[in-house]
Image (cartoon, rainbow, N blue to C red; front, side, top):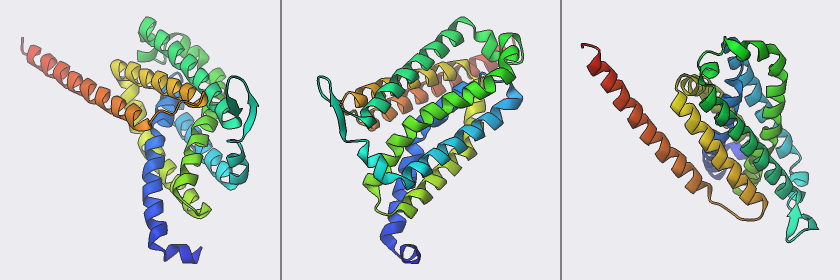
Length: 248
């Protein structure tokens, strides 16, 4: 461990891996934000933090059982093509994410008032009862996102302490920014629907990865970034129009 502290290569690996883990954690933050948005405002912060802590624990446990994780890439059976444990987890996670994102888009488009006023209507009734269910759903997707994250970490670093440190840094950054990002998403309906569209895209990517079709995440995140920039410009334009109309 002391040798690693004096090894420049280990520090470079830590920096690169932490940056990559933060980027890979974007979809995790979006998913947690959307799910927690169904809770009353006073419960959303604790649910977001708990969800990210679960993600941290999941990633660390997978890193510590790295031998078992790498065995998940071994073929289990053949149906049109060889299927491994990793393929099944990614495929199942992709289906679940597509289902949740589609349901949430339906709710946001057809019942926007529930999400704009979470203290009212069915949102208030479901508050405490759904808290555990939402955390359970976050835990399920955390396994999928963490598996992808850990396998990436193994390919980029050689030492477990470096991987664990990178995960700790990444989740720390995610916890610090999850609140502002979550509040911003919940306060802007168009951003919320855009975030849900991102989840559909990520779910489709997981499905393709599960069936053996590799998709570069760079394309996914570039599309997400471009869409976000366009929507931010639209929001700025709408704000200017509103300000011009006020004197009238």
